[in-house]
Image 1 (spheres, rainbow, N blue to C red):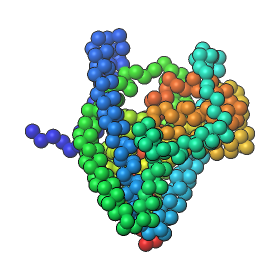
Image 2 (cartoon, helix red, strand yellow):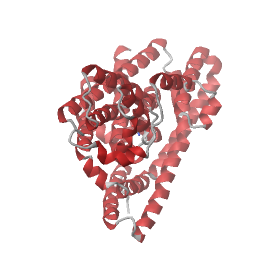
Image 3 (cartoon, rainbow, N blue to C red):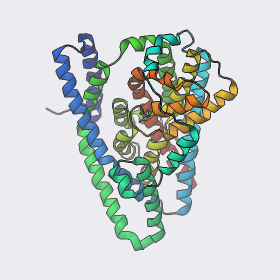
Image 4 (cartoon, rainbow, N blue to C red):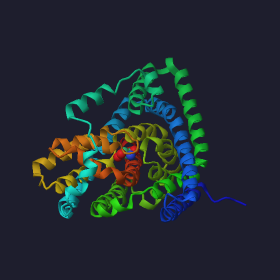
Length: 412
Ligand code: ASP
């Protein structure tokens, strides 16, 4: 019997995962079958994420250094840098603006009583995260001994080292041709391994979704329904209208074409809630299905996975407005401007791992004097909301690689 294509298998895996999760949810977690099912899906899901994480760091190191070495011309390198950074900033600014507009219009949280959540808040101690300290820590984390960074899975520090290595290889020219060839071959090897890991994706995604859906806190979800609806709605507007429109305006590519090519990465992002773990698959989709040149994908995607987070930026701003409404504070225009800026920094600083946005959100709340403990209210539903915002984060990176490619090619 011939199996359907991998793309279809992954889609089926996602559908079965949600369906089985809903069934388990209806049986309740006390049920023996459900407990066995949860144990098995926990094992398989973790194994899938472990495999992705295993290949992530070698992939980032090789793809960025080789990508830069291939963008040999100084002019071209400069254009990729500048257009990526402009793209990241503009799309995140659009996402935050959407969140602020929707938050001001729908005012989620204004009908709710903060006292309902007092229990949760009392048991939660927010870590202090003042902006200057966060900034200092962020800067300090950029340059680390590469061996330490590699061994500790420190993606941002590996990105920085790979950038420097790539530039050095370009400067050295023919002198370092062996190192360049070695890294290029290593990149091919890692991509081959990614291809094998992908075969497990249908099962891995199904397992992750079974666990996610079964463990949902339905009561909390219903209490916060309006907030959830506003966040999901605006995230969808950004992912389904804004980003595809940008893609079309710059590259004339249709959203359907994009969806077909990007589907594997988007579903993996949804199931893992981690842009970093999804990165190997994002790279594969971009280079193999979306025709992004490896040197552009090798630069834009790893950098994007660590700093370009449209979904997270949107969520940070929406949550700040929600909590302000909940405690009965009307944020002035100037305060919303502060939320705008800090949400952008907080999203850029959040690593691409599950619920990272919740940690850096403390900074956004503190910047306008909101109680940081209030994020305890959002924690029970975070895993669910993280699925969609991570998907949009990854979508933003892939659209970015296509837009940057177009901008760079137009000029050469
Ligand atoms: N989980 C998100 C990501 O990996 C980060 C976040 O928590 O917003 O992109």
